[in-house]
Length: 346
Image 1: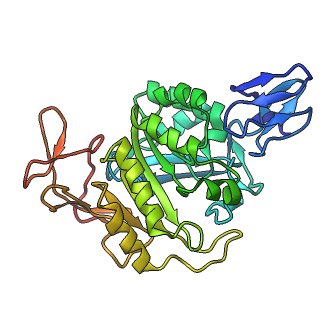
Image 2: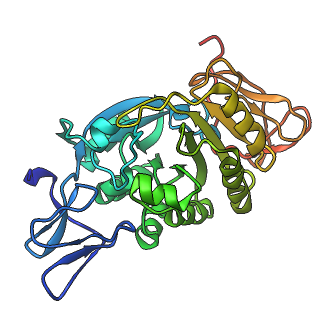
Image 3: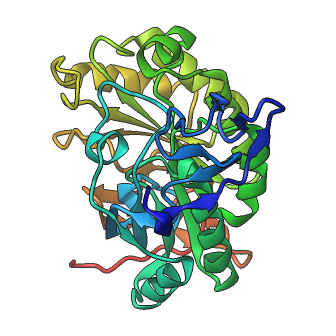
């Protein structure tokens, strides 16, 4: 245990028999002295629950906002992006398994260090906690987010959404946007394949959407959730929360412990068409040969934000005096948060 990364956990309770119970995520791990939670980054030490990864940074980069993916949040801008290690779900198809379930090399960055780095990134509008699961980095994310927001920066979480309501409510005032990875709409899939539960993730989406900008990503995994009825159920649920929530349907490729073939392109396109029956903004990711990343006006169908990979190639938007973005052809309001950065020719 590297003491540099150890801090007392924020959400736990002490039990009469000397054990501690973590209250951060729905697993609610109950731990004896020396035991570690399912996330691998919380341990019972001396009658306290401590986090083992405070300030432990395994990955650090400057990413386009679109890479998170966030398509209606400061389009064309960049985020200082950092991740740690550990995760409270166990997806057999994990795309970042080396840091989520491995033991990657890390270095210590204090919240002040992150603020200093952000100041050296003039194109960055803020910080994204991503790559691994940020909610198991809770104390560090909270402390850093407070500093970033106090300096006028934006804070983004790319998360599986598997967190209890109380710590989520404490964190949301310091967050501007979430991309929530909704891995399935089947409780059995969450329980059997991911070692988690569906309902807390749906709750996170619903609660967060009342406070911050939310986009949702579903990786369509061959043999796991490649079912058009399930896709429609996801779209219906999101529409019941807010029909303007963005849904990113992403193509799966074999990774970690899952070797089924990649998602067939034709299935992704059918899923896209079904989701569009219920949601105004649906995108297809990891499928370059089709135009699945352009933002179209839901009223007149005109292309408003044309993307090529993570780069904006064309912008057709107007802004009201009150700051709202609108389609220049029909006047439809377009729910985009923040400024749009567009540099023609790049």
